[in-house]
Image 1: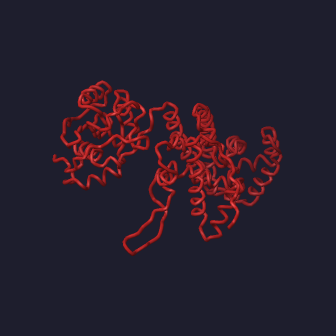
Image 2 (image 1 turned 90 degrees about the vertical axis):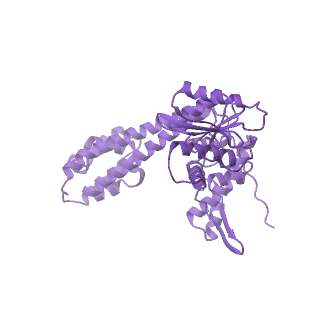
Image 3 (image 1 turned 135 degrees about the vertical axis):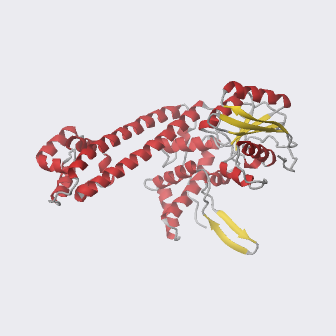
Length: 427
């Protein structure tokens, strides 16, 4: 397979680079002597190692085994500094990254989209592990700017990433189950479902009520006073208003929809599942909070209005201490909240919202900005000014998130707590 004509060796970046140099801080060679492209797989990988001149010195399958991985990495280190680049840093690519770091290699990550675009520059349309490994190695060798940082070798950040991903999965399951419960209630008793609008249906007392009574028919049969007495024994506040709303909904329907009996078998099970999922999320939130206590910057980040435990965890997972970013604008571009300019010659099409970026970071910045307008007056004032300029809700929130991004960058890089800055006098 012919190598690329580009002969320029990839240089080791400084602290703003895309390589993770936390394992080799004393390295002063300044060049990458061997670039290993690793097309990872479940049981085996394919490795392609290149010199800076494009000479292939290793091109073989590599088992998903620590000893075999370490042996190859160690042998290639006889040529000098080794950079290991993978196309998938998580799940099946986690072991090669861990072994490479432990062996003293640099590690990098080539995103799948960048790899596929780079693959179009090479002849042929075949899709093989050998070709993919070659493309990864040659792209990393000739276009090092396409690489991205792999998460630092930090146990706290790794644990936070695992727990955050698990919480996201549980949140999706919980939302799906809540929607399923609402669908069942709407099918058999729409007025009863409307009485549980909003987040009322997820309250522990309401879920226990659905588990105990099984559905609207049995509640109607039990009667107002019996349901009120049952809920009063378990509620911290007076549930009379809630019970009144529920029975107003029950009185609005007199006919029985076919399938009600089967639905009232399903309703308690759905309510039980929702309650269990919410308990799991609560447990994970407590564990995340304990882990964040060991991360020094979490208090700095949470001092900003609108940033809670989960938002702080997502931001720290994405950017760490912001040492990999040259400026706040660089951070905003990475998050995908900076507008993209489209211009060609004399044709100027203006600026448009970015469609790319780190989704986790983008969502965290967006939701924290949205939360801040409820109780932080300067954020609310800025949001209202953008709305008065004609921007829609989401666009105004995104403008606020971009402005808050500057503050977050300053807070993390300087390790300073949030403080209000007096408004400048109008000219």
